Length: 96
Picture 1 (cartoon, rainbow, N blue to C red):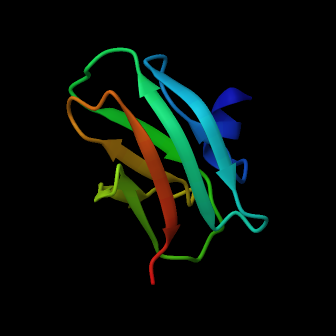
Picture 2 (picture 1 turned 120 degrees about the vertical axis):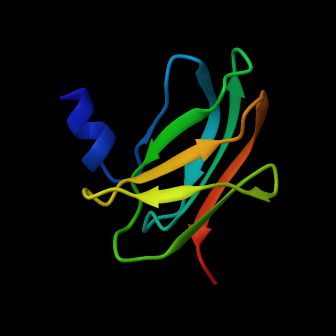
Picture 3 (picture 1 turned 90 degrees about the horizontal axis):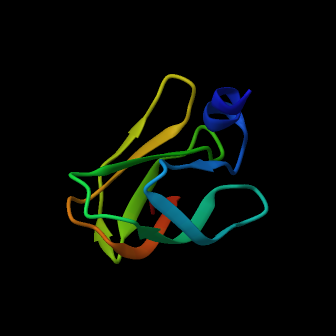
């Protein structure tokens, strides 16, 4: 059930054990997401899964810098935090 939620529940952010989600918010239609994250160690990289409104083109930033974003077959967004990231602000929004 946890894996289903990670890939299909609208508004759901899934992270590994090394990522602490301090705060998170999204708008009513789940086309905008913002979170404050802390990482327990300086990983090679951290991958997050996020489910937002489908049929939109999104862009993601970490502390104001663009980060890679891929759309998986399920419509889930796969985000990659940069190497050495410790804490910061993640924003995912529709591309303007």
